[in-house]
Image (cartoon, rainbow, N blue to C red; front, side):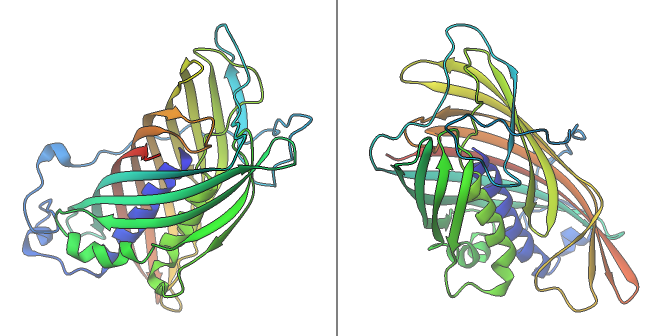
Length: 345
């Protein structure tokens, strides 16, 4: 599920890079929300800022006796409520090698304001990504191996599709392999990037790397039943900034063939200098504020690590300042993303 959240952010980075290079239309200069094809955006499609996140500091990671110790920076999983009866421990169990193909479709709307100029609203076309996963057991207790490859990334028909299509297509071919615990915590992960990737896409691929490391839903160590609640907290490094993310999970259904959860998330970041690739020498990018939030539902596949299906809505509000030669330009970006996720097999 966290894979879905961060792929959403990755595509947002690619879209933002393209928008910064586009000329502004007359409608944009007047502050009128427009799509990339120049048509007006209804008031109902404009984004709204989420409420500020209430983020707590990480606590000690719970590790079972037979479970490998996660590396520094791994998510912290806290059980908030064990739920009703019957209770059992949720684990990813893969008795034999398995191949899974997952497809995600996403739409995004962005409000962008530069300095004192009137803001503009941009609606991106739908984006579809396809990822292939190979999961297998190991001789080590409570550990699985995972290999992945991005086999498809396409922009569906919509406003501005021709602009985004070449950038999104360049992500195809990213691959890697690693190890995860049966609770969904990543122990190690390596990535291979397409050789012809342009420097401008570095930030997007960094986001994709993070998304792959966080593709599974981390499970609590304790036995849980219907109505159980747990939260997962971690610090995420992505897009040149560091932010804290807390995801709360609520177990809605737990049967032999079906496990479903509802999720809500909060994100926040302190003021910090951003490490952006490709900026001109002497340019200082400062994050002034950042907050985000969202909600969704997912059906877990405990035999494949990757969720069987899901949907997610996410909103973020970020204010930055670019300083060049002593002159500063303020930018504010609000993004609303809706995504759906489905295993093909």
